[in-house]
Length: 97
Image (cartoon, rainbow, N blue to C red):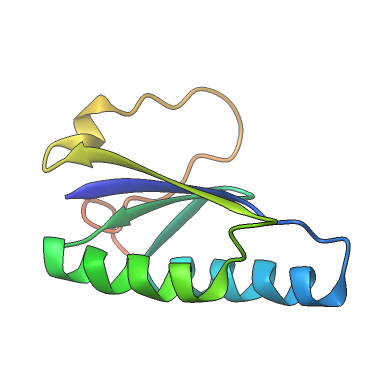
């Protein structure tokens, strides 16, 4: 299933900047960055539970927010991109040219 993950992390403190980096790293392990704090993740339900658990362990609910949008198995068909910086689709695009 395709899940869109967005986050907003307070970076006022060093701890906040560390959380921001760690959340981005976890998301990069499971998906593709499509904007600064937005990731498209193609995951199974079990992988999503694992991913969500890791993210919830990192973020601070008093300072930060996480949003999960479930686009389903055919989610890529529901995405329309216009403008600069098109992202590669690892399921359709060749990784090595």
